[in-house]
Image 1: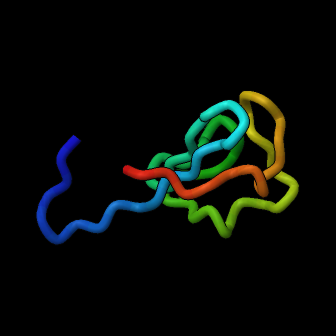
Image 2: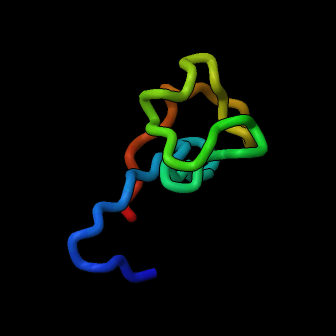
Length: 63
């Protein structure tokens, strides 16, 4: 997917255990996290929807 010049895309965060990716620009509406929600704004007790590990087991993923 290409991004128009001058547009900053939000970050993506990948689970180190299962590889599931959270995209800040998409959010996770089915879990009550609206599009555009920054990683820092997700509750610390949130867990990976695929494998259940904590937020601490995620790293910034390349876009």
